Each structure stands twice: as C-alpha cells, then as structure tokens.
Length: 254
Image (cartoon, rainbow, N blue to C red; front, side, top):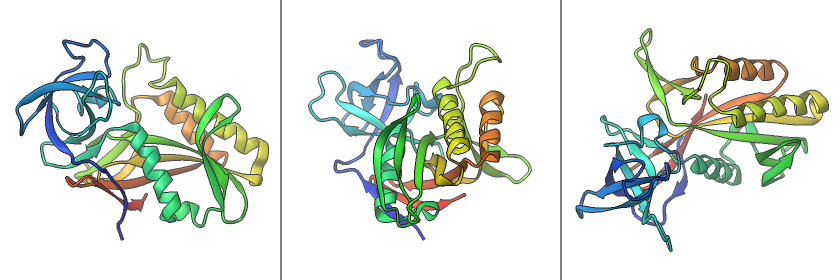
C-alpha cells in the first residue's frame, strides 16, 4: 500500500531547461529556464547538476518557485520523461523522504524507531541519520538518491542503478564521497558487531522500475558495497513515486 510522505507547499510549474550552465551565470548549478505556461525565461537552480541528462539542455521538468532568492527564481525538482514518468532529481529530497518515512513509521527495515537525529558526525564522515531502533540498538544510515534506470533486455523491465557519472580514468570512482561512506559504514559494523546497524539506503524517486543494481560503470564502488554487505552492512533500496500535484508516496522496498 502506498502512503503519502511529502507534498510541496507551492505548486509545481512545468518548464523546460534551455541551457545549463546558464549563458548569464556560469555556475554548473544554474540553468536558463523557460516557464511554459507563461512563456517567461528565468534562472533555475539545478541541485543535481544535469543529473546524467535528466535535468540538462532541453529537458522537460517541474520546478518550484524559490523564496527570497537573489539569483535563481526557481528550483528544479522533478524530471518529466517522454512517457510522462516523473523522476525526483533533487538529492536532498531523498533525505527528506526518508526522514518523513521514519517519522510516519513506513520503513519496514526500521520500524518503531526510538529516536533519531540528522547529520551525525562519525569517523571522517557526516552520515544522514543516526538513532536507536525498536530494540534500542544504534543505527547509522547514509542515503543516496537514485534517479537513473535502464531496460533489462532479458525481462523488458527497468532496473534502477547507482552510481553513474564522469570518471577521469578507470582507476577512479564516480563519487569519492560515496565510496568513503560505504567504507566507513563497514568499519563501524566490524568494530561494533551486533551493537550497531549500519545501513546504506538507496532512494529511488520513480515508480517505473522492477529492481535495483549497482552500476557496472563504477566497479570499485560496486566491489566496496558488495564487500560491506558481506560484512553486515544493510543495503536497502526504497521506491517513492511522484505525481504532478507535487505529492510523493512511499511505495515499497526492494
């Protein structure tokens, strides 16, 4: 059963990204935007950069109006695919969805949480969530946003995957920060054994996928996650669905 987790307090506005970076502002996080209904050009914040093509040049998107912004009047929140599937492309929203799901007790792998806080500094990382589960066991959870999917030719169904992005060479990873997070989650688990739960949560903000996989594009990160799972780190993909009214629903866990 789906449950509403979040709703924007301002309407979604259908728009098109004309150019990123903007001609006016060269920050990679700023794009030239066309608001379709009003035929107005403005500047928009793109929190996930081009999101591997989902929020890049000529992308159809939903934006929200920003309050008290000196530069960008709008923020890009959802990508509209050619088949009208909506994809959440704001990485910070992934954390908000998990935060609200914890409060509403929707997550099956973390039911009846006793307490939790955000942005906990542990070792050399700042993890997204820290708390105690229903058995009073510590948990540390890092959240990663998963906007991308590809067709599985064997099943003709979409598989979501993480990560994807630019690497200078095969010896480098897409995200050094993501690699550090999974390695330190593994270290914590090995140090504290059964006295802690270490969780890597992949938030899939689209409802057209059948399964989740670690990307072949980054074998170093993939190997690190598989190794961490072997040593007790929990890997938890969670699916959320958006609609054009700006509502996000918890769907299920993979």
